[in-house]
Length: 306
Image (cartoon, rainbow, N blue to C red; front, side, top):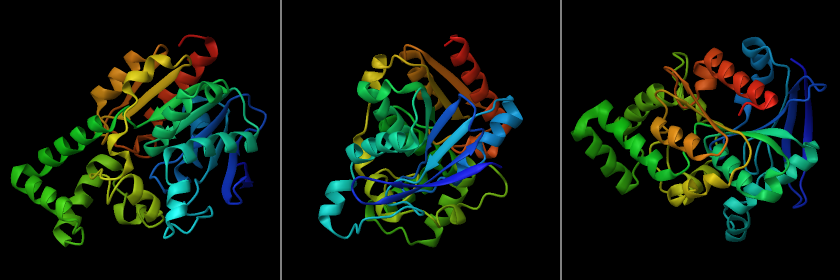
């Protein structure tokens, strides 16, 4: 695996961990935005190799970990001024643009997973930023949080029934997430809807999460949205996009499949792809199908067919 590590020195004085993987001579450049928020970027390390393996595409994939995430520097978020300055959409959107400049990217693909999908949407909505893009890839993120919340509540009810659903909601209302039974239910939900790889361990997946960032935007876990994300909605603005955009979700995703289909229809140059039997991390639990879809989209963008 070819790779090159790059420490990204931001104008605000903080440093981010970054790297590139794949073929530096390829004209196909992909900047990948991780989820969480506050997660790591490990899922993208294999993207260049898997695009070549499953779609016969040579690409160079650029990754970085956002401010506050595990391998990057973090402000002291116990200080209100740091929360005010950095834990907001505007900061992280502008950070994407600064990273683009530091990687010297233009005419590139912007891919965002989950929270990274929010950042991708918001970046694409700014015409001065969108002009640098060849296409966008929204990986498991609906264009509004209400559809996401409806989906996760349906999945919780379907899995456990009404009595357990009410129990989970009582815990969420009380904020007492330490109960063992609640955690056991979450583990089942994560295995069914987050990552369907039989070797996936949800507890291991959260060990590198930056909790200050995650709790501020999301809440306690993937089935609770109580943070700043809860009112986010860009659905009405999708017709503004003038570049190709892929909406890709897993069949058993925490994101609504129907919502993603509607988004693709609203987008002037939208494309929808479903990974059958996939979860929220369907690039990991079903890589062949995911990268075949992604490769097909990239080929169609190159050919002007989307």
